[in-house]
Length: 134
Image (cartoon, rainbow, N blue to C red):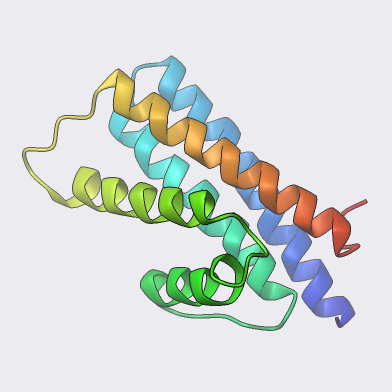
């Protein structure tokens, strides 16, 4: 792993942590659509932190998620449950952001926020094991 990859990974993970705090503020203030959106981006930044270690990047979200699932979930590096949650958080975010009639509930926002935290915890452990985070 090159130093620039390590630094990019750390930066992306810090974005994930910052965005998790933003998602919590949205949840606490009843901005449920925004909480769902921010929760997805927590997960997205976290998996991009993992991909940065191997100098892999994608312009499209679906490509980053597919690569992560193929190379990290299917191989057992991350649990299958994480892959399922990643797929669901992406789908719910897309519905929330693009569907005119999507009703964002407290329950759904809480679920997505919890998923974001779940993913961040696994990624943080992985990055510590890879000596990216101390």
